[in-house]
Image (cartoon, rainbow, N blue to C red; front, side, top):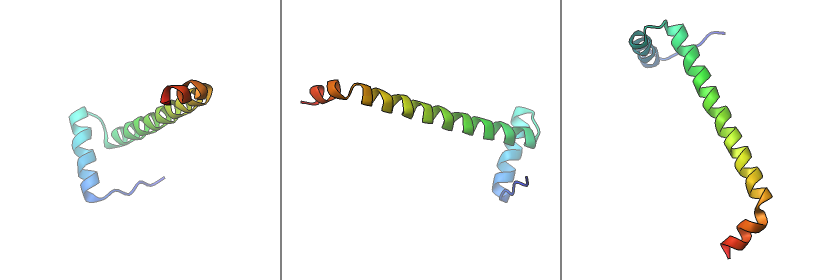
Length: 65
């Protein structure tokens, strides 16, 4: 896989890697893992919320009256 970054993105990645004492590759991999983790948690929360709404639809309807 080849990741093409703009000059600005490359420079921001370089600065962040330097601050964290990591290589640019390590920093990019960490950012990707963190992004995917946040997305997975968001999907999980949405799923749990949807299940709760479905399970308690009657109660929620009565509360809305």
